[in-house]
Image (cartoon, rainbow, N blue to C red):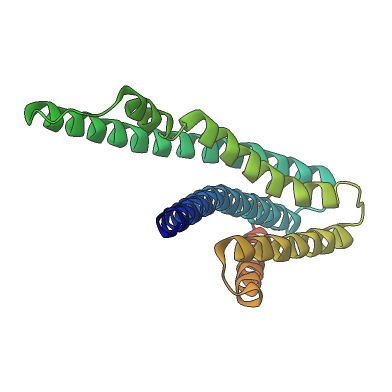
Length: 226
């Protein structure tokens, strides 16, 4: 009876170890997936922040010398289109370069294995490595959309405000609120202090809008005809 009980205890112990190992592997896999998703989300938040600051600053600059609402909205819309296009093209070129580098490295690794007669890589592994390569088109679209989401905030906030001074105040206020929101999201995704990160994003946005407004106002009042 002792031998069967010992065998049963050993089997039970092995089963517990197997379950524990599987659970650990699943947790590691979940953490890895979360990390990848967090990187994409953080990049999206940063892209939206760029769109917000760029267009809000552009509208503040135009508003410093022009009281016409159409001028501000057209400038903001032009900034949205130009910025989204620039982000998409830049991201596409960057990811294409990264993809080419990784493909070249894969070919070098494969050639080394063939030369050393150690080519035991399974076809499925090759397919997985190819599928893991970054997608330039997907990255470009994501960057353009993220920038557009941030850029549309000051446009919508000021679209229906007729008074010039109130419109400028609305752009600054809406941009400030959105900057705080983006700062909090970026801090949560990056696991950084929320107050410090939000304040840094907010102050940076204020500086960009203030500098653009001040320099444009200075040039406009210096004799440049608009």
